[in-house]
Amino acid sequence: MSQTAASINQEAGWQASLDLAYANKNGKTCLVKKQHKGPLMVQKPFYPEAEHCCHTYLIHPPGGIAGGDQLQINSHLQDATHALITTPAATKFYRSIGPQAQQQQTLHVEDNAILEWLPQETVYFCAANVLNKTIIHMKESSSLMAWEIQCLGLTAQQQHFEYGQCLQRLEVWQDGRPLMLEMNRFIGGDDFLHSACGMHNHKTLATFIIKDPHQYLDGAMLDSFKPTQDVMVTACTYVNGLYIIRALGKYAEDIKNYFIQIWQHVRPIMLNLDPCSPRIWMT
Image (cartoon, rainbow, N blue to C red; front, side, top):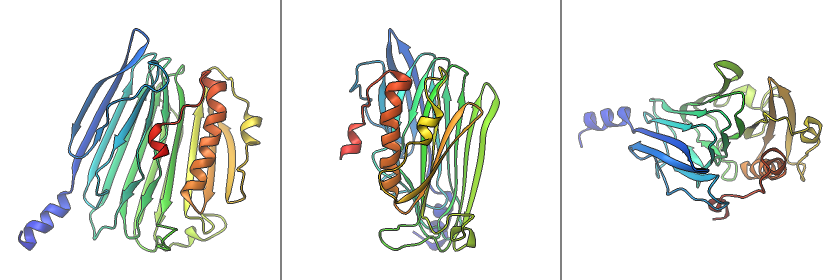
């Protein structure tokens, strides 16, 4: 391949999309649409806890996401459906020599539908250039448990986020009204990554959002739920009908385990369902 052709190909990157739709068929949540383009797809849905809840595994490009890649993920839960969506491994954004990598995840949760959005962590390698957006649209009767775990660099390999840029947006809407609009901008090597009013030298930040339309949960209970080890900083707030749990830590695994403990505690109270961890988490 010529140098010019290689440059054009790199700027183009992957153009990938995945469209999912779930429907309630006689009490069973069925994945009725799974249209994909490029290296984005889902495995066959699983039903480890009877047919009311469909476990779905999103498969990202096996080589990670590089500069110029554009990924679109759309998921639509129709009335009275229940989906648990996760990923088998971390989503990785690699370094870029210029072009921006973009990912947008748009999730629609209709009346009396339940979404458990529980992906593995997202890792931004040093010198990555990323725009990463997650947008959730719900109804008043929708139930939601969703987390996002972001890692700046590779802590275990001592590879810090010294260069690059990451723009991360997280939006939650209900009936066209914004409940949460958040944007984070991380610049490699910036003082914000080290200052006490910023990341304070933590490499991982995470947000866990819970919407309980039936108000079964107790905010004081969530606020008192502390990690078993003093390896992170956590806080819980209640804003616009959302419980928002935040965590800062060194390792994604610690925060993920903390969020899983909360999820295991909340699920029986909020959904009247025993915790049923995706099998892929065990591998």
